[in-house]
Image 1 (spheres, rainbow, N blue to C red):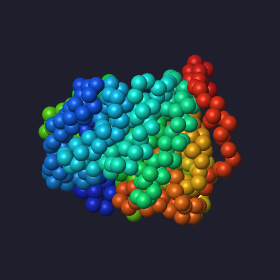
Image 2 (tube, one colour):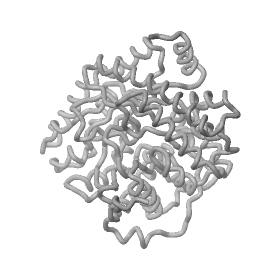
Image 3 (cartoon, rainbow, N blue to C red):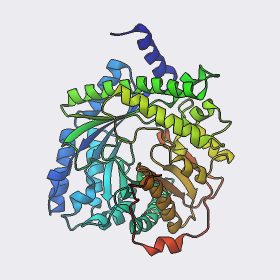
Image 4 (cartoon, rainbow, N blue to C red):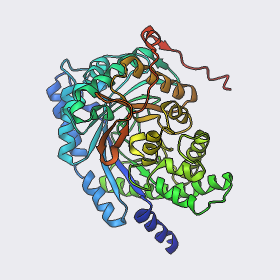
Length: 451
């Protein structure tokens, strides 16, 4: 039964507290587009994407108008292209250009899936696609790329870590005229989910339906506003407030997902209830942690407060919707969060503290800008460190790191919009090269003696 108070509360959340649907993402399987002739395969890819997604943007805009809920992005994810391109002999960059063309034709802002899954080794087409990532991301503006280099069940592919350190650096170098933006569209995962609606890591898993709708909600400002009303609450009460607020946010996401699914005639997949921040005032995960009681994000207590936030968000979301998936928790992308940006600039927040925080939140070292002279081996070792956290803790972790070519600590890269601006952060310069160059596979952890 509709309650006037609930309706007014939702309106206030939207108007004053930055509640929005961050993305409606349509996942599309391209398995039926595989062909040994790359031109035929690309034609099939373009035809299928444009056929399935032709009404996605219109439906999103219609739902915005009808329900008054901002839907910031309409996006696409596709089957990892390394699987589709394996039958072809030509450069997979043609697929990236086809993805870009299709994305522009249907009007979405980003398309994910220029991806490879190499957690246990390289199959046909994987290395070719990975080596093409710098060129593909330099030639496109809408295409996003991801590579899964480890998992709890398989361990970590150290050879893939080494390669990805080089690829990240090359991608930044190839897009230096665009503030190294190519690297902001590239994510390296451990335990990558195959139903993630958020970019740049979204891809359509092979176990998913032929076409599906996934929704990502966002409301850090709503959570902070709720907490601000209870300045003297104890920590148990704080957790309860976050759970109740997350419940309300997730219900909005489920409504939009179900309606979009009905109108597009495709199955409804999941709601990813991650608190995804933006550089806008009042839309920061860091500011939630400060509302709980930290003087500045990065201070002692940051990991504990983030763990509480992440757990409470999940508990509230699961009560609101039975179809929870993706990443679901709290994101800490430095350049995309006004509070994180301030904390990094002030020196309160360093990469080592961020790494500790990633053990208890969604994703990992996200949108971190490092000096342009950071070596490929150092980037590879950062990837390996983050993958180890995900592998041992049976959670998704990722690295989206941007070497700021030609810049050093204290400078910044500014992309504007949701990507924000990233202060160049200090990196430990002691060399990990001997470790990285050993290669091989870091074994999967023992699951029976958890401690």
